[in-house]
Length: 203
Image 1 (cartoon, one colour):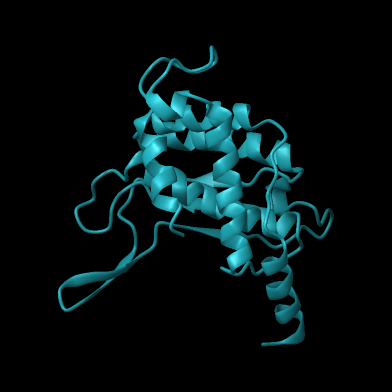
Image 2 (cartoon, helix red, strand yellow):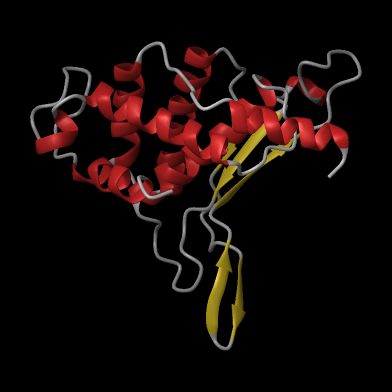
């Protein structure tokens, strides 16, 4: 591993938190997101969550695309052995202003696919949110930590867990037992986020 990449890898391992200034606001945005399933609605609500997370962590908000398409995948022996739920890319900086890409677009771009690889079913809300937060952590690494080629280190996954734990705590009892959500929430049950936290605890 080249010296620069080794230093980035070590830095990624050292930083284990991703603090939010207002977890309840992030939880409200996350709750709204998991209530919708169509690609257009998800893009709008996920973009709002990204704006909240970016403002609270001091990074520019990334672009988001949500193709209403099957996840790219590979098969072996008739079975799916790999699928791409989402990804994160960096655009080249503008020559006039290196803080943005050409045309003033954000440097970071997140993509989250809206349909499962084989059958083309709509991705479960908890899985969609899981992927979105994962890719946001890559964006945070690039913008805040200066790690342009973000690694999947133990520190990276610790940052994801910290981010999710804060959102869960910000939701209060609403995520625990279906209690009434804060006034800013739309009414409705909240089991989907509960399932997400149990899924990701093993990461």
